[in-house]
Amino acid sequence: MAKIPDEVQDFVKNKMAWVATASPDGMPNTTPKGTVQVIDEERIVFADLFSFKTRDNLQKNPKVAVTVVDLEKYKGYQFKGSAELVDSGPIFDRVVEQLKKAPMQLPDPKYVVIITVDSIFDQSVGPKAGQQIV
Image (cartoon, rainbow, N blue to C red; front, side):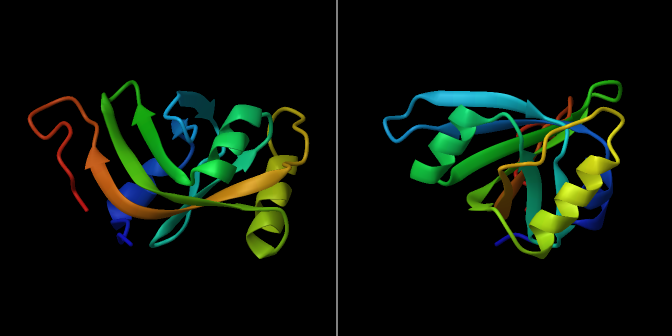
């Protein structure tokens, strides 16, 4: 497990992310997520609202990459790790409550996806692009 640096934890707040998964036979899938957040020093989470292919992939292959970017600043980070789909408990309940406060009406999630982060990479424009930071 990797410890998510404080500056990266702060960066993730209120950003759009893209989640990449792969089926067991290697077919890639990416999907945007507006619900990605850091839940502690080693894990991030997102709500599974409409992600049939992502959910199916993660149930069969838990490896995942999540890239969070600030398009105006050309800055970003990619998290790689393993996912767990959770349909109850305190983290699930917290995400459900947060979704009720969203500016648009969203359905309750089927699951939340908790990702234990193994590594983090710089995705910013510049000389450190692609370098592993944790």
